[in-house]
Image 1 (cartoon, helix red, strand yellow):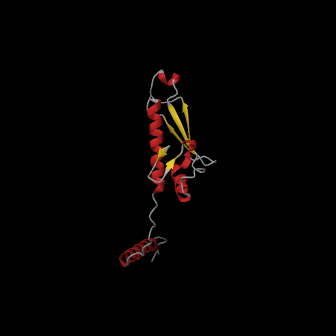
Image 2 (cartoon, one colour):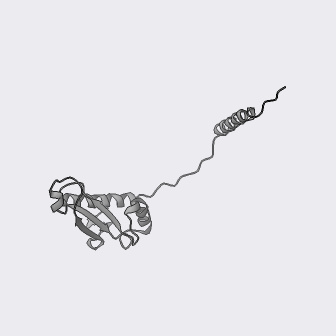
Image 3 (cartoon, helix red, strand yellow):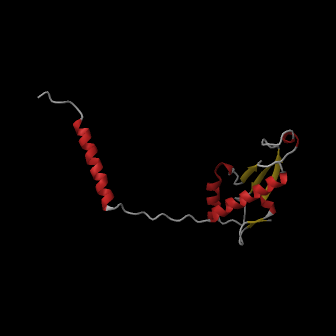
Length: 139
């Protein structure tokens, strides 16, 4: 069981780990040992995550979100399989914690009088520049 916060924890059945060969550092070790980890979290089917959190998680995950609603994290940072596994779990927990934060609503503000005046002045100046262009009278 992976504990995210006091209220949210992820059960073992929701996580699937697969070990694959890493493309990172390790010399001959890379060709022999499967140290990279691919962590799959069944986010869509998770009973522990509320709907809005799942939606935010999907947006944060981006390309790592699959069509069937799973989140896939690949880690091949170190030569140690155990350390890569820890890193993958930490990253998943961090991603879920980020998704738990509700984004603050933007309060639309009106432009100030000064900014309106500056805009109009700039438009007038630009119009004058454009008005000077064109054919010149021979007179």
